[in-house]
Length: 187
Image (cartoon, rainbow, N blue to C red; front, side, top):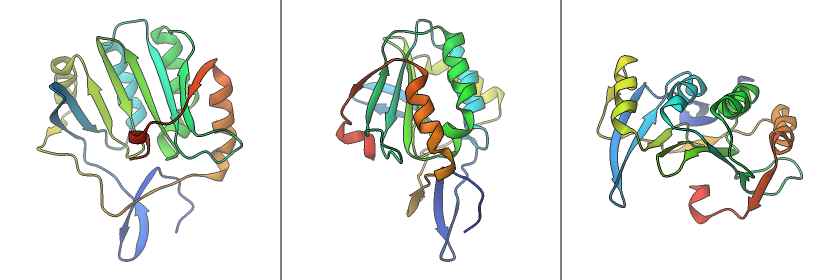
């Protein structure tokens, strides 16, 4: 195994290697609500920052720590107050490497009821709300529409000891309201 950091891996020729999606998206209807499943390709945080302006302010942030590597408790950490787009962008920039390269967490950016973006441990973005605008943005970036985004089977989540300080730092970055993990958080 190499020292390169990645969030999601798969097995090829008996070796755990980084998984990379082709930039693409699929439409889904879940509980009567249309959403997009987006495979962001090589720059997931850049795409997340590019899509964020499509959600109106104020914004809520939910950081879901599924697999802690420090003394932190696994759980859902919701911003204790709403934030401006600029404040959320600052969070994304500050923790870009950690959020993009470590598989211990999910991140939700929401503007209820207008929409939300969920960057999950499987390196996909679930987008709710302004679907037509998001599709237009993805098409501008030459993303392919596909029937389904498939998470590799088998796959692995990578947790990097060198990023443990970032786990602590993100939990100290804002005031968070903590709650227990939900059953679907660890899928």
